[in-house]
Each structure stands twice: as C-alpha cells, then as structure tokens.
Length: 205
Image 1 (cartoon, rainbow, N blue to C red):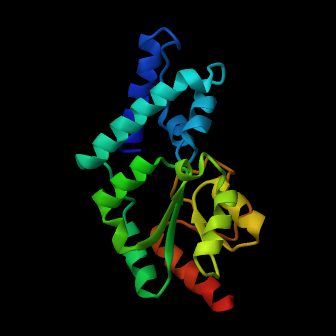
Image 2: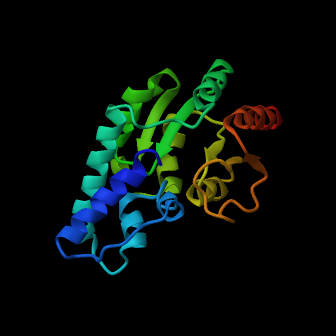
C-alpha cells in the first residue's frame, strides 16, 4: 500500500486524461482489495466496462510507478517479515515465492529487500501467462520436493491450498477483505505467528 495507492491513482489518471474513464476517488479499502490480484483482474474490478486492451496501458503505468517507488526506497515490508523469513530459513524450510505479480515487480523486490537470502524459487503469474496459482503449483510440485504449506493473505492462496489438499496459513494482517479468509484454521495476526503455525503443521505431517 505504501506504493500501490500512489501508482494506481497515476495509472487511473491516464484513463481520465484520455477521456476513457470518469474522474474517481478510490478509498484505501478499495485499493487494498486489488493487491494480490493479477493486473487484468484488478482492472476488471475497477473498470468492468472497459476492455483490457484499454486498461492495459494504465496497468503498465501502475507497474512502472511501482518499480520506481521500490527502487527509490518508498516500499516497505510488514514489520517482522524479515525476521520471520530468516527464522523459517534457519529452521531448514525451503521458501518458494508464488505471486500474481509481474516479473519486473518480482525482480524489483528481490533487489530492494534481498529476497534471495530467503527464497529458493520464484514463480509469477506473468511467467505462466496469467495462470491461477493452483495451476502454477503443478510446476512447483514437479520442481520442489514437498511436503508443502501455503501461506498467504488472499482467497486465491486459500483456493490453491484447498485444490491440492495442502495446509494453509492465512495472514489476517494482510489485504484480505472482511470474510475472505473465513474458515481458515491457522490465521496469523502477525508474521511471528507464521513461524509458530509452520512448526505446528510440520510436526504433524
């Protein structure tokens, strides 16, 4: 949200300047609902009457601004995330990055936050032509030995886990809208709880 709220408004402004969309203010709550979606899904949510051929240029502008804001230090991780990732790594877990993001965004956060110290593999929606996470997981399963635990803050992460019968840890401190993670057995209120839940699940597998 440090960077996405800024980038989204600039991308939408491009549509307004071209007369393709009316001026509109987006609440932070609405903006947060886009995080974790593919760019196409996010813009369909915002501008359902506009084709992707129109909104794609605005989406590209959003991506450009986000990458710039990551590189200039504006972006932030949630407090406690680096410590959580390091603890999981120290405990011997293999960490896999699976995101609906663009490849350029993946590379930007890898540089900015030193993700390579923690993550062994990276998989993005763009890399798989917009495929859903449950489909991308088929490739992960063929390349990374299990067992597996899914950790995420959106229903798309929960769907991945349910589709493949995997344990799921939901992150209530993330960007899920109200009710989105209902029914989740393991719901982390902060990053430190993720370590506790992973260890609990790991000991039961």
